[in-house]
Length: 235
Image (cartoon, rainbow, N blue to C red; front, side, top):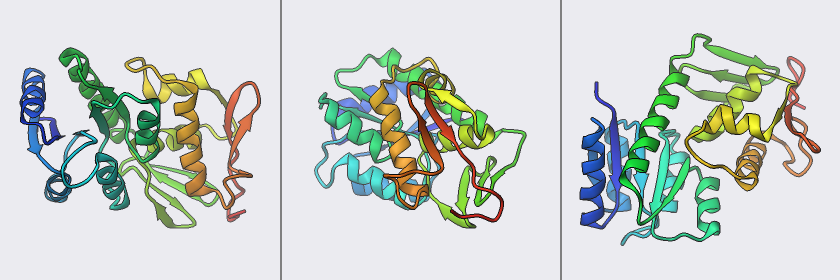
């Protein structure tokens, strides 16, 4: 089965250009010209990556991503936008996007990033180990589903990668450089703010009080450590 990408943009010229890029990389593409059409498409079909514009007629791309994640759809999302403010990029990552590319973009770079994201996502799904368990937490590496006290918590693609990394190595201190390498790889430049955004999002989902975390701990001057609860404990 061919890899497939959903292109969400109300600009026909951009859609055609992105479709051409996908075709040149042997990736099938489907076009949605509005946010509502994109939401309908992801309910009908599974995609390997979603390329999302921010400014559309019916709703912002940010809102589309929020709805996709709220529905438990974990398909990786790359925002491609003409807005180049740092705030937009950080906000996009905070609501569940995996990368942010500004227009005008270089077709070769877009194609390379899409292929790299598809490859990493598939490698995670093909993991030999099925279930990671740490106290009240459980992570199924085949289905990429995460649970706390047997209640499912929906994670974005990057949140999944981070949680899997932490649960695979409980109590290990990960520097930011190690997290960059394991979660983002070498295809995209990631700054400290990006790591912090995802750590804070995870804390917001798994901690009772994200302001005083007990599971994902900051190790001053080094990075982060996952402190698993004892079996049967929910802290």
